Amino acid sequence: MIYINKYCNYTFSKYPVNEKTAYACCTISHGPRKLFEKSNMWGIMRKENDKNIITGKIKEFESKKAKLMIMGGKEMVKKQHELGKLTARERFNLLFDKGSFQEVQLFTKHRSTLFGLENKEIPADGVITGFGRVNGRVVFAAAQDFTCSGGSLGEMQAKKIWKVMDMAIAARKPFVSLNDSGGARIQEGVPALDGYGGIFYRNTLASGYIPQITATMGPTAGGAVYSPALTDWVFMVKESSYMCITGPDVIKAVIGEEVTNEALGGAFVHSTKSGVCHFATDNDRDCINKIRMLLSYLPDSCHSPLPIMPTSDKPDRECPELEEILPDKPSKSYDMKRLIMEIADNHEMLEPHALWAKNMIVTFIRIMGCPVGVVANNPRFGAGVLDVSASDKAARFIRFCDAFNIPLLTLADVPGYLPGTRQEWAGIISHGAKMLHAYSEATVPKLTIVIRKDYGGAYIGMCSKQLGADYVMAWPSAEIAVMGAEGACNIIYRREIQTASDPEAKRKELAKTYEAQFNNPYFAAGLGIIDEIIRPRDTRKRIAFLLDALKDKSEKRLTKKHNNIPL
Image (cartoon, rainbow, N blue to C red; front, side, top):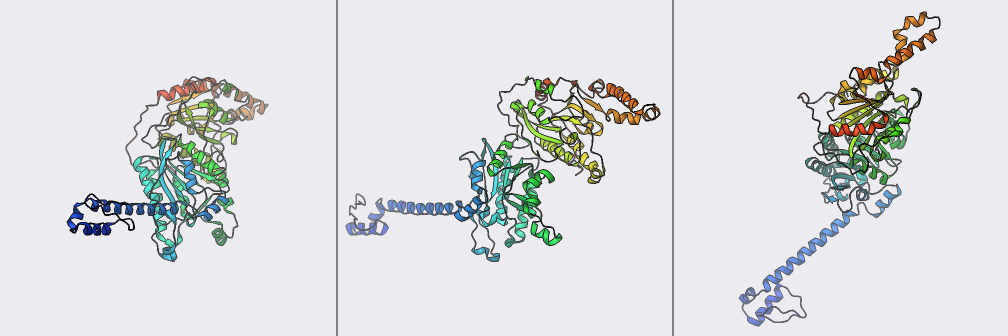
């Protein structure tokens, strides 16, 4: 039973109440239309109708949204899982803190009508974009959805990615890209290529301004590979991701070479041979966990403070283990990573490029909660010698740390540059110069510790005082010289050795004298080239106090457009 109002109490029990029936009721009961208009019935009916319309629109919205949220459908999601891969939304669920992800441009659709695309639905145009929190800090991200048209990049997918990249730059927050795509959407033609161009342009604008991380979690081929190369850090998943300019089919057709995707551009190849990949991970979950870990070391932007993590470690903690780490003979190797972890807060470090150019270590640690970038020779591989790949690896890392105000710690134990035609023809001169340029250019606090050997031009290359080191220390075991004792004596005392009755005995005698005079830290310390000789056990303590003293360091350089690093 519904009563119309106090003027018209005619009851409708068989008919729906609406404007028509209400008006009829009032006319039957009282005659004039004015009575109906004066009554509250008009407003009540209008509100009821508006409410019904809004409810219907909300239901329509929820239905459309639900359809988009299932991505390419159950069958495609099942195939993705069978390949050992998570979906784009599952990856975001792992990346972002629970409930923090906010999606951007969910309803974007492609607008191409070529080659039957007008009849093809591609939910969210094959990419999920938005922002959320990672360990409580805002991060922007895009994840290609392989279940929708193979995650292929077309005009509107690219514009979605542009949008979230622009937001990240404006907000001064990190940007993460999860790539899983068959490449450009060929049916759309040139607009797809323009889409890549816009991404590359934004990668370049954001370089050194906000941290950029790419995870290749599936196929990435052709032009798509250049965006990862333009970002700061590249992650790959073993056995399910690959990157290559041209695929196996094209290579076979053009040069007759047969190769698989994994052998051509898999995670192992790019993390051990090319150096394109910084982190090779076991699976999607491992990959995203490591991204979250890396982000914990990085500031939001070049204008943001470094993230300081609470620590129970102490600044004055001594490291007695370091006094037992060096072998008795200088020619024997030791584990430089063990040395680094002894210095670090809670003995923890995060090492990029762990499998490439192993003669050089670059890694993140914390000292009293503050991120620090470490560059160190690794005597376990090639005696820690500098070569083309080691120089590139170090130079890139140094420039990243300097761009984002992360202090640098250099641990030197280097016999020199690797000699030979292979290195000369590969361009060791220009590649080695990259490292010199990177150190000289850096204005962050720079500490150097000479652990053992530090010979010749490599001594300069490992952040000597003349390359701008703020403070140079040495262990008592340090040997700082133009070259090793025997090599030096062969040049300086050539005639004496040749004319001696026993040349070998004479060489050893002269070498011993040379070592006593030059192959120690005291000669360099006497000239002020070394600021301090320290006991190994005091290494962490000295680093902690120096970094605290230098935390407000400010250094101005010549005004210019930019440096011209020897690329």
